[in-house]
Length: 493
Image 1 (cartoon, rainbow, N blue to C red):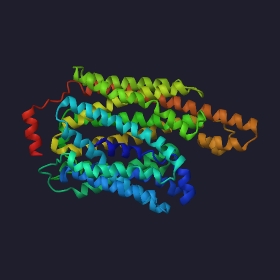
Image 2 (image 1 turned 120 degrees about the horizontal axis):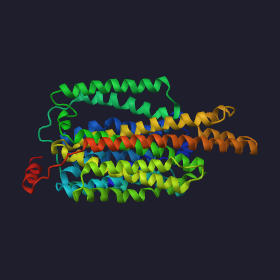
Image 3 (image 1 turned 180 degrees about the vertical axis):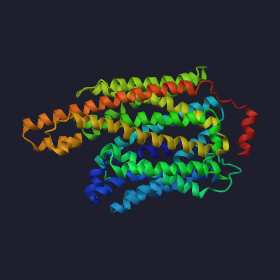
């Protein structure tokens, strides 16, 4: 029951990939409107995660989950039958609000429902696998639905699952909340959004547009409000994010290492999807189907990691091993040429397996070391770290790849070709055959060199993360709860 909304929320990140041409033909959005149709969902979701996690602790995680399901279903219905770009943007914003309630609520309920450490580790492993696999599945499902139905069908598939959750959720899911939450920190909410939204916006634009002043200023403004937000949380009587969460030895490292995991995962996805389509020349649906292969290893990695920890292997060693595995994946990506389909898939699969190993363990550690009455807040912080890490990975690694591409592309190439691989391929189609082929070949080689440089950077980041994990997690344990203690704590909550 908890995996259904999580799967759909993660699928909605990529569900528009193949629907954009049909939406453009039907609604005729401007270039700016098309960008907002894509981005508003992630912006709203990232901006509200911390708020919704704290709200769930106050009003009840199950209640917030059901409210979010209703919002997500309503937003899906509005999006499916949108008759203008403005309506679709508004609907995607509503979906972002719903997603921000569903993600931390599902994670927090896993924390409160599974009291046995072994069962909780397995449940979080499934949670991590579904979250990662849903993003890959969303693009494939989008392509298949648009092939046989109209573009609105990619949103209508959400309705049966949300209806099922609204009917069975109150029966199957237990309610839990903080019995003494204090006053709601409205100023903290405003400061958190003022911090998150500009940073996410700047980091999302930098890879494609470059380090222009407005994007750097956006990140700087966001970091300034982040500083004010932290100061507010330290001094408020009832803070939105309790500083007590970070008094545990495990919670701070869990958030940090989760962020580094997302950095590596989204940084690689930025390159591999375009490599499959633009370098290898696969169609969108072909690229999406090939992209499903690496997720096979994802379903194996988290359960194996949980089993190792339960058998007595130190969590520090398992997490460091996950980072080293992911570094090997980036190492394979650093070896690719312009015709290396299986090498790219192998690298992406090894990378994903290592990252999911880390994410499942850090999610388990972060939730397990957090007080039960702050499970929603803890979940929202872990998810916010993932959002920041993903945006930062695309910004840093994407910028490295772009810089190498622009350095390697011939100076005589047209301006559009010097900017992006897509621009080069579009220009090449308009040139005489021999000239166009030469430009396309040079552009593909330049892009591949950029991908290699980004992969080498990824290797260095992940090796550093492995050392950090081995040091920060050394001796960190989760105290097992007895049956009597669990019953007392659950009864209180």
